[in-house]
Image 1: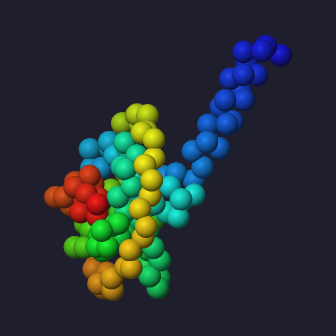
Image 2: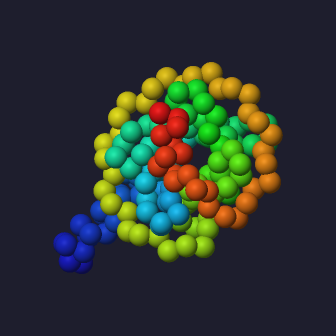
Length: 143
């Protein structure tokens, strides 16, 4: 076998291992602006590497909390919903949209200590339409 083919094969097999269990989150424009690192206790990082939120199970719901202790919304079937039930972000296969190519991620910053989480509100009816709040703005509410 060709040596360059073996090197290419090695790196193509190693790249998924380096990323572990990371799920990219896209905004309404199809831009990857954040990701969930499931290997880091379901921490949500901005694309540049800043930890801003995390997922935590509450009964049958998976909730999104900010590191500032605030409740942000829900994560269900690869979609992040705001408090009103509108979509603010989603993984690529969760909604029917064209996504742009993902750029290089920044180095992950240190994850802050998780705060005590507040009581979560009742989940509203989840909608199929996008929120007026961008995914980036939504996540900054938790910083």
